Amino acid sequence: MNGLTLYPWQQTTWDALLAGTARMPHALLLTGEAGIGKRRFAERLAAWFLCEAPGKTSEPCGVCESCRWFAAGNHPDYRVLAPGDDADEEEEGTKAKRRFPTIGVDDVRELNDFVNLTSHRGGARVTVVYPAESLNLAAANALLKTLEEPPAGAQFILVAHHWRRLLPTIRSRCRIFPLPMPEHRAAAAWLAQHGVVDPELHLHHSGGAPLAALEDAGADWLGTRRALLEHLANPGALDVLAVAGELEKSKLDAALVIAWLQKWVYDLVSMGLAGVVRYYPDCKDDLTRLSVRAPQLLKYAERLLEAQRLAHHPLNLRLVYETLLNDYVAAFRKGR
Image (cartoon, rainbow, N blue to C red; front, side, top):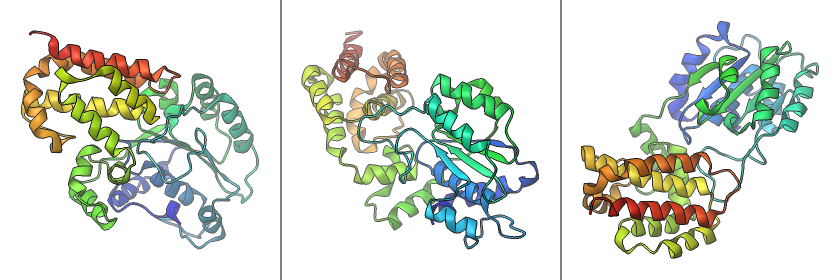
């Protein structure tokens, strides 16, 4: 019954949300870093809305007929609006295979048919939108109309890793509720319980997000990332065409590869300006050696940010990687 169980670091946040149930809005926007369990939190909240236990307080009972249907994944008054088949355990960590996740206007129109029907159980009709920033413009505008004039009993839970990408009008119709990053010690302990060797390192790789760290520990792309970082550590000898070709052959999501570049450059700049490494402590010697060039990488970091915004558009991946790697090498040549 995963949808009814919180991650251990979420209890305090859950209690804070449920303390204001008398003011619970019809649309809630859960925000926070990818990989911290926002979808699990949203599922538990959906189960709480649907629970039929008399006098329920701070958690779904788990035993009423509604809770049993929810746990079985076939509750008639519950819908998940997500791009493609996104219903697996999460989450929020980056997906290895290339895909272009979008929620389209037809998906929202089908959802509107659901929210305007009478509830099967005589209670709420709950929709989770995950991740909400994957709504395309037409879909976002269609959803906005429903959020502006919600049918009685309709409850919406939007989940966003990058909530500022949502239309301001959608954000204004929701109560924004941020989920904090888990405390580092609790996240490391949870990873150790799940058999992760060196949880501290994988937490660094994922920026402190435990679910992303769990994926990081067992991903089949670890060798690809390691090879890329070794190339980045020697920009003078970096064979741009060969490395770009290998990255294209890997068929990894462009957003994932660009994120590796972003983290590397972040650490270079951070080491150069503050002597601190956040993501790749296992590469600290190389980062220290290259950090004297940190000021020259500030504009390149902006270039990566723009590339990340376009990562889920249909692109010529080889050309994208060649351009980004060429720009990286060129950044080190400046000022010589």
